[in-house]
Length: 259
Length: 76
Image (cartoon, rainbow over all chains, first blue to last red; front, side, top):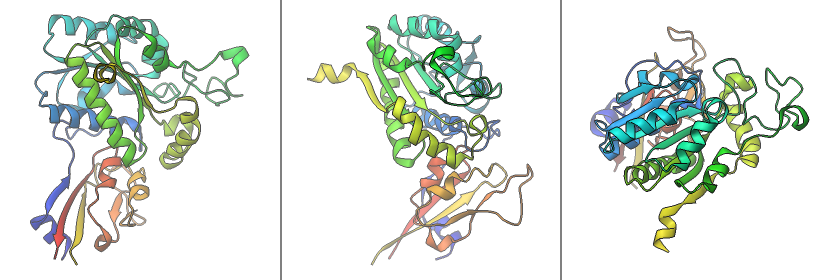
């Protein structure tokens, strides 16, 4: 059977989600953002929420997410996405409101906004992409940069005496009364992508039920900022970042309800 | 014995040649082009061994740019 015959007679096993449009993404080759955009599009499509989803885009590499996903979007000032999402959710409580933020936006500049929005238990989901670096501006050290990691602004590696320690935002969020679901995922392999998709769907569902706020952290790669090939970046992430940022659910109130 | 056959369609103009699909493919169906580049100068992904494809869609799932569409069929 030739390729053309399989395409004609066979069934479709996978195609780009329809909410992800044909604009070419500005991301570097192999960037985790692309996979996470696809997951968001797939989950919203499966939930049938395309008309009711409102995203808030950050400042950082993820800023142009509104150009790639065909749902409503609002662009926030740097780090202020959770505050904007709070406003949107309070005015339009039937909408699926989420923010999409990098580590510089959510943990650095917007750390205060992020923690207070989560602690208020707003029915929003914060999608937090942690790639340990300020990717858009050229790979400077971020709050999430690992100890000893060399970046443009820590050329001898991150040192505790000078730069302090990496911030475990998800662990902090899990301690807050207002959060309903806090999880840490990644998208480096097919298995990880499947798990991440389930986690994202769960977070969206919990935030729609207004049980509390949700934080979905994705440990991601920045192959340009880390100065590696995309394949090596995935390997480095699996070997180094998962040690400090272990994957899994950190808080899940729906599990407590069942038991 | 029934055999699952697959076929991939790659949007080569959209491809950025990150090689993640090549690594994710369990059957070595895909490889980056060695003789040509697309209009943006990237070596794009090609199905160099189409007969090996089993339609698992691993390549399509890891593709950050959503360039790959996968079809599959059960061959008796």
